[in-house]
Length: 605
Image 1 (cartoon, rainbow, N blue to C red):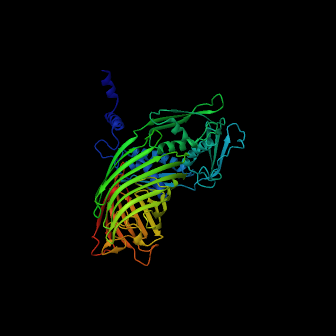
Image 2 (image 1 turned 45 degrees about the vertical axis):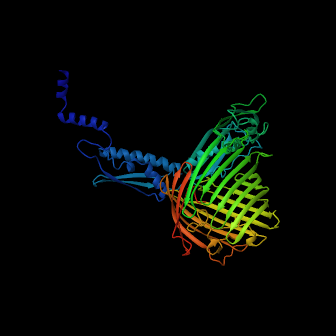
Image 3 (image 1 turned 90 degrees about the vertical axis):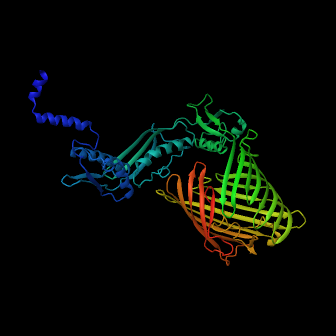
């Protein structure tokens, strides 16, 4: 009875409106009762910076949900109103504190026209960046307070919220590097002064006590000896604390490839002796691995490489690797041994032994080669090495009778690698210099000197889409005797997948009756544009050129041979799978095929 009485008190139209209102609240966005919502088009005006314009559009629901029109005009206005606040926050984060944002909605248009009008105004500049102690006292004289420029907050440049936040972490790292592990930022004060259109930034901090390294506790070792780990520590007990050395220690342990977990941290307080205890927690990974690789080139045929490696042979990070290579051109067994921390932490001993049969169009060689190289790291990525070497070989070449050689050498090498990835570099470069004298001990008294240099460089041209330019150049020279006195398997050759693509293996070299005989000098040039189409697929266009020469030094009066082509890259967890098709631009009718195909793992250089 009560419900009937209540119903009589309300006109029917108000009851319908009430029900419609309740339903509209619970309906999904973009739907309405019997209609398709309020379709609209939206534009953004007044922002010339394409990057900033893209950021604002990415934040906007009005742009993102054009395909989901709101049920009513009121909901459309609320959507644009929410965007205005998002725009204002984004503009302030980039220094536009006086920005004016308006929205115009033309309700009579079909569809409805929505226009955001933005006047960014001038970017507010950083007027001051100060770092002070919470106590108000000046910093100790031994503390170097980072400048605004060191914090990427140069006074006079537009303020940027992200940089202001990042500078806070940078301040702490710099203080920790000077011996203050408990430094804290107590307050970050950002004052916007509209009268001068500027921003004043102040960081108030507590340094905490000065600390020195205490005892280092190492946990988690199973087969790796603790002494090996301790020798790699970049600090000694009693040294002034430096937080950057944690990064260095982690890098050293990572490079051993012995651990899956490396956790380094300091205690929460100084010990009774006023020192800071350090703990290192390690988890060993498997130290042995087996790998198999395959390759194919139309000029070289198919090839298979299988290897076995132990990275902790005698429990102090010693590495031993044996690899078997089988192809139509080579049958080889390579053995390498590396002793880390040889006589000093930045030095290693590298022993190599190779037994092989090389059977190419240029020569057939049965050889045994060994070397013992001491290598020292001068700085990160930069290494120098030297040591004795010996090569025993029996060489057959079409121009000569079978020859035997017993070559004593003393190779020296310099490597500087600033690239970011072994198989797929995108930044930095690689420089390699090699030089070695050779002396034949079998009575011929042949002496010669061989040098070789190569450099590769990588430049990112575009981020989206990802486009990379890679360039490489190499030169080589041999002097001291005539070409025919130098073993054929040591001379320079050009052509093939690792040299000048498009030409058969070793054929861009001095020839005799159409067969390569090698030279005493070499020039190689390569350029690649590498485009990443998707996360797993890439395209490459390349140009290679060069030649080997009879003379001691490259003879540029002789034309270089050039090859060009394109390739596909399939990116795998262990590196890109490479498929290249090369075409010779200076094709020799009786020698060169119309094209060559190369398949292998890793970029060409």
